[in-house]
Each structure stands twice: as structure tokens, then as C-alpha cells.
Length: 222
Image 1 (cartoon, rainbow, N blue to C red):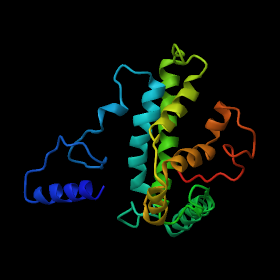
Image 2: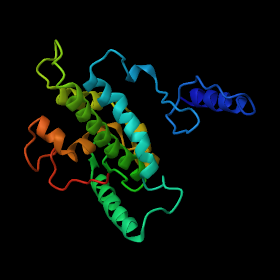
Image 3: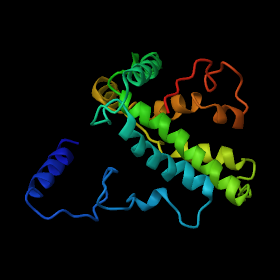
């Protein structure tokens, strides 16, 4: 890992003063110059099911767009004083909620304050993408169920696709470091917490009221 980190640092340093490689895939960024959305192809299939595409790349796009309206995304004070107070109130719900999440593998709680911006974007991206998917359904009709996974409705498939984008394995030391100083919550909580805040997910999978995946006190910002 040390050699890999050293290589990445040296590679980035060599790029200083060099022309920018616009074809290099990296973290998504908002830019008004490109007039396009560039993401790794693995998250999007042009001929793939709408539910899968909206759940995967759709939620990623929604996540990045929401960063323009998170705790650090507004470069100008365009909120009214009352709107700012309401924003802070709703944001504090996320801070308390994520900070109460216990991670038994490392005997720690998440840091809801350090990860606030990303948590807002995770929750907002899920909602925005699902709204877009529902608009697609209203426009083109309910998608047919897929062979081999016909037991899932299109709505359920959307949420499964959303969750699959965060599927990963992580060692305990990396998990601890993530909780101590990471700007993102661990992937498990980037999936479960936003879904537990989202009533359409609970409805799609018939989650009992006040159960772990259909919490009573939901945090909602956008």
C-alpha cells in the first residue's frame, strides 16, 4: 500500500505544468465548461434496464448535484436567515443520526459531523434519482420484469442497483481510519442509512414500521 501511495503521489506531481488529460477517469466533478457528464462506463449501460441505470449512475449524478446545496456547496449567501436556520436544523438531524450509528466491527460510532456533506449528498442523490425514475415510468410505462430476477419489481431493482454501487470489502484498520478522518461514511452505511430514511424503499420491500430499514425518525433535507 505504501508503494502504491508513493506511486500515485509521484504520478500526480509529474503532471504539474502538463496539459490536462480530459479522458482520464477520476472522481466526478461539476464543471460548466464540459456541458456533459463523464462517468466510468461500468455504471451505465445504454441498452440496460432503466431501473438499473437510474439506481446506479442516476444516484451518482444526483449525489454530485446535491453537493451544490450541502453544508459547503453554497459559495454565496443566497439563503435567507430563516432558510439558513431551517437548513441547519435539518442538517443537524443527519449529524445526530449518523453519529448514533454503531460499527461493531471496530467498536466505534460514525462521525456524523465529519461526513455531513457526503451524507447529505447520499440521501439527496437517492431521492433525486428515484424521482427521475418515477418520471420515466410515468412517461414510458412500467418496465417489464427482467428474466432471472423476475421476483423483483422495477422499484426493488432500482434500490438493489443503488446498493450494488457501494458493494465492497474493507479491513478493520481501514474502517477505523475511515471513521476517524474520512469525509464519507463507510459504504455499508452509505447504503443502509439513506434507504432507511426513504419511505419508497420501505414500501417497495414492505419493511415494518420503526424497523431498522424503516426508521420512525427519518432525516430529510431536499
